[in-house]
Every structure is written in C-alpha cells, then in structure tokens.
Amino acid sequence: MTSDAIEVQNLTKTFGTTTAIDDISFRVGAGEIVAFLGPNGAGKTTTIAILLGLIEPTRGRIRVLGRAMPQERQAVLSRVNFSSPYVALPYDLTVDENLEVFARLYGVVDRRTRLRSLADLFEVAHLWTRRTGLLSSGEMARVNLIKALLNDPEILFLDEPTAALDPAAADTVRSLLVRLKEERGITIFYTSHNMREVERLSTRIVFLHDGRIVADGAAREVVQQYGKKDLEEFFVALARSGHQGLS
Image (cartoon, rainbow, N blue to C red):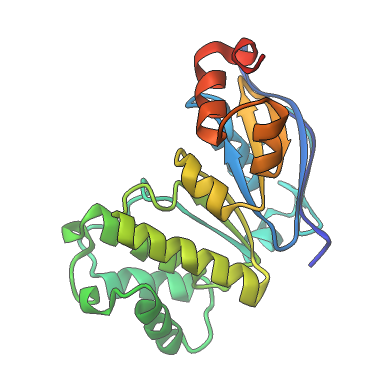
C-alpha cells in the first residue's frame, strides 16, 4: 500500500449550475481512521461516490491506493469496500444467501470459513437462515458490515456505520473498527453525525461545508483552533451560522 491511501487534489463537481464540491484537496494516510464530516447537503456523499468511481468529477485529480480514479476503477474496487445502513440487500434472500452471493462476486477463497468467522465476529450467526427483509435496522447494519469486509479491503468506506445501532451494538462496532485498524492496518474513511463517536474513533477529521473544506486535523486541534468546547459545538455553530458561527 502507498503511504497515501487516498489523494484528492482540486476536486470539483457541478450538477448544472449547482456546485456540489468546490475545489477541495485532502489526503488520507494508510492506516488512518478519518471522519468526513459536514451538515446534510455539504457534499460528503458526492465525494464518496467520486472516490468509488460511481460518478465522474468535473475537475480534479483522485488517486486511491496509488491508482487514478475513475480510470483504474476496476483495479481499485477489488481492494476497497463500502457499507451503509441505508443500502438494502435483497429482502427475499436469507442472510446466508445474500452474503454467499457477495462472497462469490468478490472471489473470496474458502468462502464458508470466511463467512462463519465474520458471523461470529459480528454476533449474527443466529440470523443466518432468516430472510433479510425480516431483520431489524441494527441487524441489517451488522450484515452490511460483514458484506463490506468479505474481500478483506485495504480501505473501508462507511456511511454512518453505527446510525442504526443501539448503544451497546454501536460500541461493539467501534471497537471492531479500531481492532481492524490496529491488526490489519486498514484505512477507514467514514461519515457520521455522532460527534462523540468521532472524537473517540477518528485519528483525524475533514470537515466539509457548502462543498468546501473548512477544517482538517485531529478533532482536538480543530476544537481548540476555533475556541469551541467540543466537536459537537463546532458542528452546530457551523451548521447554523456558517463561518460566522466559528468566530
């Protein structure tokens, strides 16, 4: 893996007369856990879609694991994965059937062993024969995380990974993510609206507002720089009043 897992330079994305991403640049080092933050509509989802090669940028340069995106998308996608509690799996298939399909698509060696290991890790073995459409939101979130880890990714993109989980399950997932970083050196790039979670989990934050980066650094450093009590106060001030709220 290269020293920079993700490199974004002067990224801009427009939709007609609307600028969703406005000339942003940032890097994510290999093995970092970086929280990509901002109010709704700030441009987070658009940026992640570009990093995954789902949409093309208007301008800018993107490299993921040292490869140009979207030009080398196929080579990149075999080494990364994505999870969101808002993305549904086919409801009529069982948990086992859904994950078996993805394991085959990802070319997982010794699929059954890998699936059993992840089922135990996320404590969902008892759900194995249940239809996915009957799962609770928290159960679905854990199954989606298993799907995202099947190919042992070098970068894990997560959209609000604990949003649908109760406090105990969310704490378990946070601990697992830290363990993945420490044991496998995985890079995690994720969105969240839980600022306490971000302060605990992330090594760094990149904060987006109106398509522009307004803060980039360790959470504690950002809070101190703007004279706020904590990251939640920083978020609220920016969301409500824009840059004026940070003065």
